[in-house]
Image (tube, rainbow, N blue to C red; front, top):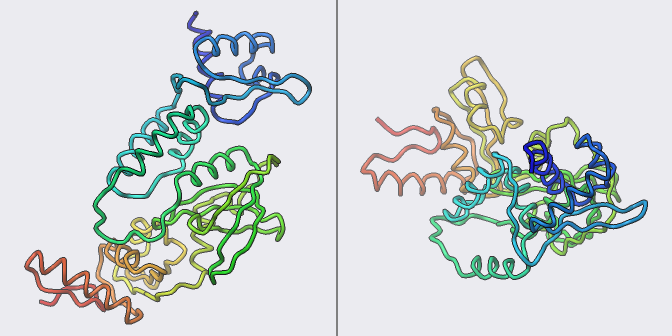
Amino acid sequence: MTSDMTARMLRLLSLLQTRREWSGADLADRLSVTVRTVRRDIDRLRELGYPVDSARGHSGGYRLTSGSDLPPLLLDDDEAVAIAVALRTAAGGLTGIEETALRALAKLEQVLPRRLRGQVGALQESLAGITWEEQGPRADPTLLAALAVACRDHEIITFDYTTRHGGPARRRVEPCHLVDSGGLWYLVAHDTDKDDWRLFRLDRITDAIPTGRRVPPRPVPGDDPAAFVASRLSAAPTRYRAIATVHAPADRIRARTRGLATRLKPLTDTTCRIDASDDYLPRIARTLAGLDADYTLDADPDVLHHLRTTAHRALHAAGRPRPDPSTGTAPE
C-alpha cells in the first residue's frame, strides 16, 4: 500500500467515523477521487476488519457499524488525549467531560461489539469510589453518548422531561450541543413544538428516542453554545442567593470564573460584583473560593451557614483561625 493510498485510507476512515452515513459521491468529493476508487478503498477497509455497511440506490451510502471484533480505531490527537483524561477523571470520581471526549465516545459506541458493551456495563456497575461530598445530580453516561451522536448527526429526538416544578412533559427537539456548567450537563436544542431555543438538564431527561429524521444544522444564537447557556442560566431563578462584591478588577475575576461571565458586573476599576447564586450550596462555595480576592457577601442564611461550616472544618484541620464568610477574610 503506497503512502498516498495509506493517507487516503486514513482520511476515509476518519470521515466514516464523523458521520453516521456518507454517500459515495460525497466521499469521492472529500477525497478528490472517483466513486470507483471509494468503493475499492471501502473493500480494503473491510479486509482490515472495519465493519462498513453499504446500501444501493439513490439514497444509499456507507456507514461504519458495530462488528463481531473491535477493529483499530482512528483518533486524532485531541480525541486521544480527551479519552485518557476522561478515563482518569472518571476513575477519580469527577464528572467533567469536554465535547472532544464526547466525539470520541460516540466513535467508540459506533464500533464497540455487543459483548464488550456488556463487559463495560458490568465493570462500571462493579466499581466503587470514595465520595468526599455530595456531587449533586449526575448525567447518565449512556444518555450522554446517545445525545452526542444525535447532536453530531443533527437528528431530531423525543424524550420525557421533568420540568423545574416537577411536572412531566414530552419534548421533540433538534439537538445541537452539550454543555457542562458547574458539574451539570445541559442539552442546547431547538424545540420544534415551541419553535424556540431551550436548555434541558440531562438528569431530568428520560426515554430519549431518535426519530430517524435529520435536519440541516441550526446555528445557536450568538454562535457560542457556552455563552448561550451561561446567559440563560444567569437569568434563571435559583434556590440560594449569593451576591459577592469583589475587591478586584472585573477582567481578573472573569478570567477565573468563565462559566459565570454573564453574572459579573464591573463596579469600578478595582471592584466588581458577581452573582454566585445557585441551586447547589457546594457550587456556591467553590465559586467564591475560586475568586482569589477579598469580597463582601450578601447571601441567604443557608449560604452563610454552609460557608461557615465548610471554612470551620478546613481551617480547624489546618489549625488556623476561621474566616468571616460575610467578608471572605480571616480575622487579624
